[in-house]
Length: 282
Image (cartoon, rainbow, N blue to C red; front, side, top):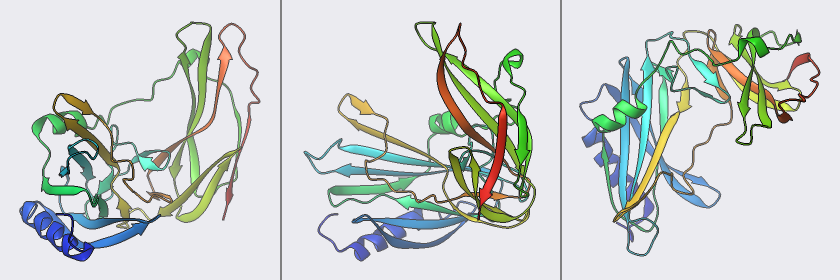
């Protein structure tokens, strides 16, 4: 495959992609060439038409002597009905407790390319991959020790977000003397807007669209696998690129933001300043 110009390879990849997924219930847009930090790769848009879990898998082989010979990238897309709210963990929807997009959204899928690849094919994920990565537990509750929740004094100066929960989690270290403490806050998007959320030193760029708006976003859930002979590894290629600049929400979506994490002695817990101010930068 190497030795051909990039546009010729793009056409080959695009033809194979369309042929592989021609019977799937999503529309296929064009495949374009992208450049990032001197690296070239492809991107393709799909628009799901049905509530469903989709798997877009790319499998490729390197020439001898170039990393793991066999590689795969699995993109899992969890599509809810139009208007279904999602729950974010930071910049992206949490794919284990939430749909990642809705019917009618445009999902951007990066397609990996490297000059040392000698074979490439597309496929749907297998049953095991669907069973592992395709599940959504919509009933999952955030784990927290109720008796250790703190009573925060919250000032919210962001009209686009409503505070609906605030919780702390505690992870005890192996020596049983210290623990990692994380404080997080959950918001619900209530008004459209574009801003940077600021909670202390934590900053998160956010765009909020109206509830029924169709959006364009990068695929959320991506898994990589590498193998050769009896040696395997779970990882994406080192320069796999996915451009995420904003958390892209709709009114009704929820978003969890961890704003403070530290280590403390279990028998001598740190004294926290329980005043919390939530601001935004336009």
